[in-house]
Image (cartoon, rainbow, N blue to C red; front, side, top):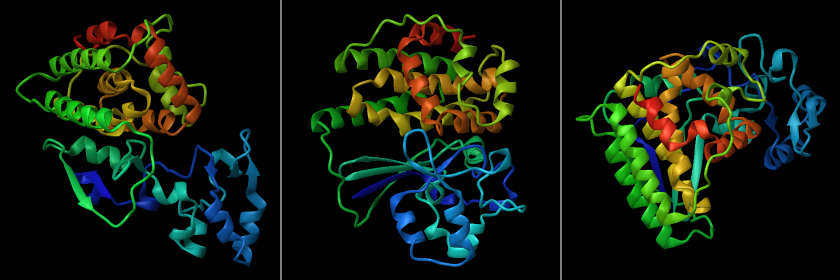
Length: 319
């Protein structure tokens, strides 16, 4: 299998208890089957603690019941993981071991990156000054079975290279690049599938008022949000590249490339509207990308909200 990652990927290091936020607070963690099987083989105080906090969510998934202030029950006063300390990081739940990494599999290609939801990762992308490039590395993992149409996959791969080219053309202001990217995506979508006419009259700022709240600071950002011109050309570019890398190729599964490009453009608008810093992207990502409920709502609004139409996004990005 080929592993594809951004060049900065290998530089990521978790800073554990020094982190200004905590990935162990605010959301529930699933207890995956492999981890649960391992926990049955251990004994002592840590086994008792694990058993005492196992619970079921509304979907029937086994989870760890959160403590006060939505903290993981194993997060200690120093913001370190007692489970990690007791049995080693490789035996913590899969979600914990992977965070903030994300994975997309396309047969014999695995794409991995790091999410804005981690403030360290967000800072890395904020401070990256050179155009983001990607590395391919061969490994011994077997290809993942899938029903991807090969012709569509290679068509989208070529289209993504063109999207990167548009976004990273620093001879053109970022606002104009985003308009060009939207025009490109509209034409691309016409070749893939029909796209619905938006009909939802939701206000632009209400798009970001997520039903599932993880950090109240995000609500404050949205409440104080206002339209500002897009600035910080390089960070805006890096935001757009992040979204194109993370989501664009998933159109091979649903034939919806336009929504993926809209995400990139809206990603550039988020700091302009809610705070021009890496912390804003961290807050948005943690609230949205790491809540299935919020993310499903967002994906629907991308297709149905009039305020997220290509025409309106062009107006907002051109302010």
